[in-house]
Image (cartoon, rainbow, N blue to C red; front, side, top):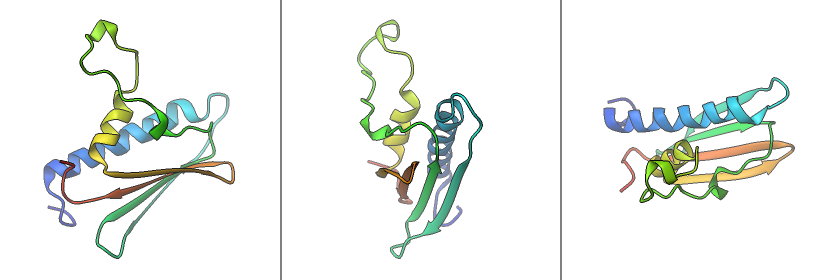
Length: 114
């Protein structure tokens, strides 16, 4: 375990972060290069706070509807599964657009989401 996180939980967090960052890399800057800032710190209650910020196209992942998992593969829209996984693995996600930046704040518990 690292910082009280079991291996399974670490893998969930890694997958969530990978999905967020790949989406930013692929879509935030469609016509130019850009930067992504990731800052991590421990909250007073021991949870991990991760802030991911970019100056790309405004995009709130929380506004994206979850995919219809009951629909057949051929009936589903392309995309959206990465954001869905992030929402499943991270209980508390906040989005704000401030100063021309997308800012996602993730509050990460050591326990998996029920």
